Length: 153
Image (cartoon, rainbow, N blue to C red; front, side, top):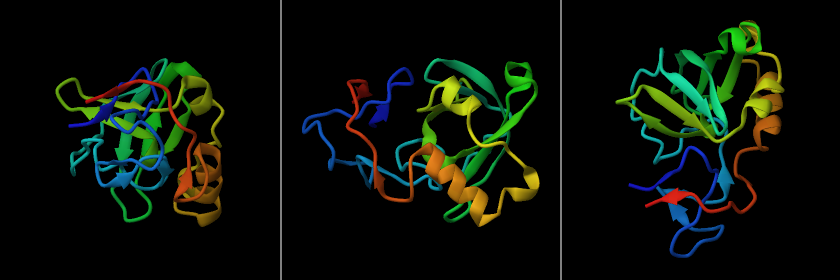
C-alpha cells in the first residue's frame, strides 16, 4: 500500500510527478472534504486518536465525520494552543495508524495554529467551509505543488 511518510508531504514514485494516480485519486490534486483513498480511514471511528502534524503532535480528535463532500476532523489541541479546537478537512489526512491510534496530517503546527477559528455553529456553513478550503489548499481539485521525496511504497 502506498502512503506518505508522516515527516514529509511528498509524492514521488516510479513516474515521480504530478498526474500520477495514487489510490484512485490523481496525485497532485486536493479535495479538502474527502479522505484520500489510501489514507486508511475505512469507516473507522477516529475519535480519541492523537493527531500528528509534520512537525509533532497537535492534539486529540474530538469527532470525525465521513460526510459526502464534507468529511472532517475536529481536534482538541489541549494546552498546545490554549485549549482551542480546530477543524481539519479530511483531505489533509495523510494516513492513519490504527495500532498506535494516530492520524498523520500533511500540515505543520504553524499552519494548523493559524487556521481559521473553529466555531461549532459554523461547521456546516458553506462560507466557513469555503474559507477552510481556501486556507488548506484551494477548491476541490486544485493542484498542489509537486512534492519532495518521502513516499513509502
